[in-house]
Image 1: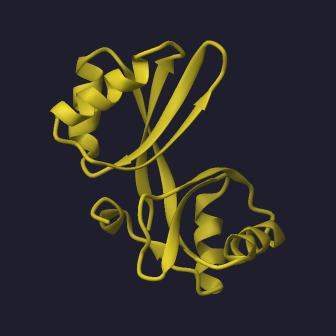
Image 2: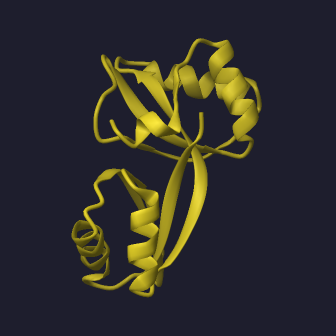
Length: 143
């Protein structure tokens, strides 16, 4: 069920993000989803890519600090209230969403969101119990 996300730690300065995307491009790694969070000094670029191994190797070889994190890719009804329905059921189960971001494309008629939870195993149980599709990691990388 889980997907693996890579996180790249960046200095918050001009050109640093372009350097990462250039490295990934040269390594023939396709970015499927991303989110960037920053402070005045540094940023964290979170990525879902089609080949974690190639991405991590290429970035580490160029001196970047790269981490790996388990996340869930969840189908969200693409209609008003679709995201609220999921967030409400997680709230009822006292599961905290640490962060989330959108995926590049839809899965059928639904949107896809990437979620990081404080308790990923419980989140999977709640989502499945409520008939919310959690997309298998191997499928996520090929969407």
